[in-house]
Image (tube, rainbow, N blue to C red):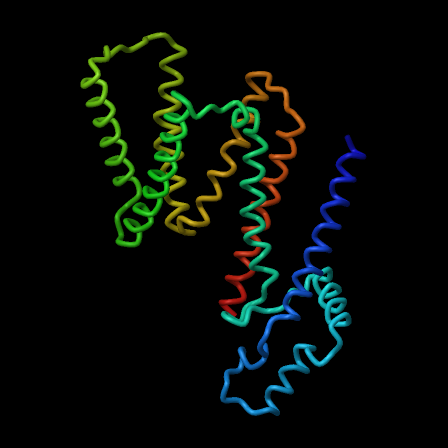
Length: 271
């Protein structure tokens, strides 16, 4: 297995190298002057020549490619000519998002592999998408409410009341029996869900959302499956597979990359 993995990584590295070489060769055949595109058509020849020297366009093509490859491997990916920011931090931030999605995919791969879109499978997928969109809209609305000075505790209570009334109405429409289990296990679990899992958890999350924004607070949702796996390991005897371990590692690394790059960008903008 290890030999196979190393062989695939070597093949991937070779593929990336050949792809970069091919793209570089194609760009050399494209018509036009890069510096004239950057500086505009009204600039003089002296400015164009200075731009070509600054970008290394006056050097032979093989030398330019090897210089680019050395800079790329060293972390110097240049700056964007459209917004004038470094490319490397932007790529690392988006790489973090990609790693998180890949990690979640590996964690749930057994379920995804067995998913069938016929019948109940398509219904479950549709409800999952609706739930994700609803949660995102709720985050945005909560952030807006807090910007307008609405308190978290009161709006949280109203939201839970609306949710309870909606659930009650749905149950009555379906003519479902309203029952209550007085057993200690049910009462304790209901108390935990109502107080800790709803009032305290949602109050803390919405407060955090108001402080750091819905985009960064959304990273917490990526950690939920990791926490669920940990609880299942403690209380349900879950046996971790290699894919689950790799998926959790990718989620943790992806969160770290995305958050660190955002923090660095915010500090640079503040300066």
